[in-house]
Image (cartoon, rainbow, N blue to C red; front, side):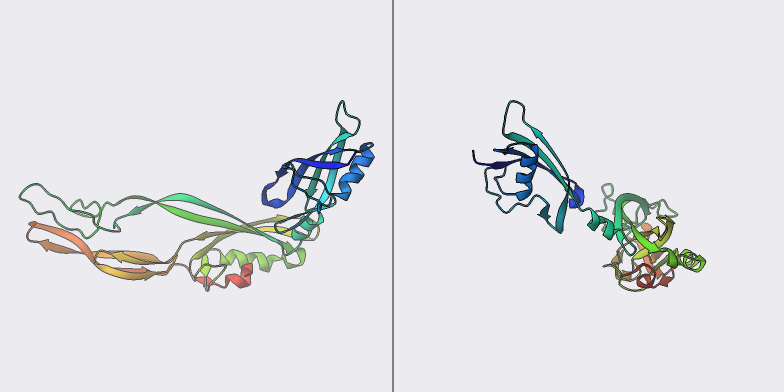
Amino acid sequence: MAVIIHELRRRKRTFAKEETREYIISGATGVSNAEAIFMEGGGVDRLGVDIAGFSGSTISITGGNLALSSINTSQIEGSDDCFNVTAKWDRGGQEQEEEQVGGEVVSFDVSPQTVKITQSLDNVSNRAAPGIVAPDFEGGIGWNGKTFTGCDKIIPSLSFTLTKIVGEGSINNAYVTGLAAAAGHCNNALWRGFAKHEVLFVGMSGSRRDADAYTIAFKFLAQNSASVNVGKINGIPKKGWEQLWVTYEDTDHKAAKFIAKAPYSAHVERIYDEVNFTTLFGG
């Protein structure tokens, strides 16, 4: 009887670190023979497509190869020459190598954040009772006669953590205190795709990984730069973590018989110092 390797199913682990496949091998003379046939490769997949180029010891995936880490073979009940083979491949030593000194992992989170705003993007309409002209506050929200009370707005908040493996020889008091002093600083130049002043270093945590290295997690917040409009004041450039504030003046709306408030001037302030992120955290 001809030997056939027939693939049943595949199960992949996230980030292509691990893959398990199940096969039926027919025409084998025993468990050892079935495993030997499997290691030679060949056969057909679960849809009957030829996979003659298959090799049992390694499989090719996007981003590299996985190495065979385990194989479990059992005879199918009621059959003399049919066997189930479940094989597992993983990255093995390759993954360990990536986790040596100098390796890094980036994790991120985008969550809603509530902020108080007193100025809208656009004034959509102003309405009043018949015979009365509604005043125009030029986008100011919630005027109560004294101040703009504003409203809550949901905006996306991006935070991310850069986890690096650092050699023991690099960890000393000067290294730790230097990074501590950098907390509350922004990037002074383009860094990892973020423009100057868009990333804020907010802290770190670290622990010994083994006898030769530490694992350190650097934590950041990110905020985009923008060109801002406030009332009739247009195109105000504001870098990510710079702060904008506005003064208002009385405007006499004679037709509305109302003294309203409207933006008079807009001011952008830098409140965070900058440091070289590439020097501290790598490019």
